[in-house]
Structures are given as C-alpha cells and as structure tokens.
Length: 109
Image (spheres, one colour):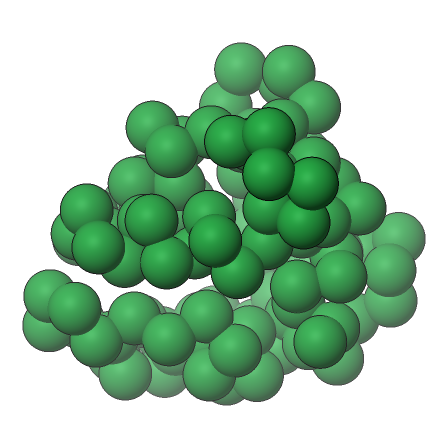
C-alpha cells in the first residue's frame, strides 16, 4: 500500500508545506489538510497500519519522529517537542504508545 492510494498527493504536499519548518507541526491542521480527517474510521486505521513500521499495533515515540516521512520520504523528522506533543494528544491510556483506536480518535477529534 502507498499512502497515495488513500490520500491525494496534492493534499499531502499541501499538508507538508504547512509544517515544513521545525516546530510548526499541528496534528489537527495536518489531518484536515491531508484529508485524513475526512476518512472513515476504517480508512484511518488502514493509514495507521501503514505508519506502524514494525507492525506492533502501536506507534511509539521513535515511529512518531518519522511520522511526516511516511507521507513523503523527503519530509523532515518531527522535533522532540512535536513528537512528545503528538504522543500526548493521542495516548489516552498513558502507556507511552498510540494504538489504532487512539490514533483514529485523535484524527477525528
């Protein structure tokens, strides 16, 4: 699966443009611009599986650091503060990782 199988390349490019500078990544803005927020829960979980590098069923901070690169290989890494902010926004049970349900809830919040 390629991310452009489910999201428009133009929408992804626009979302990445909005957060190209360090410490400018805003999850909800990214989800809106990229089209993720308009997707069904099932589609969002498909995207989650694409982002989950090790297929563990969870995203940890190391995977989140490369979040933008899953949408475009040349994109920047998230900064440490952006990574921690993204984790805090989604990790509802406080276990230090984001499950598929938590990811979907964050995208649609």
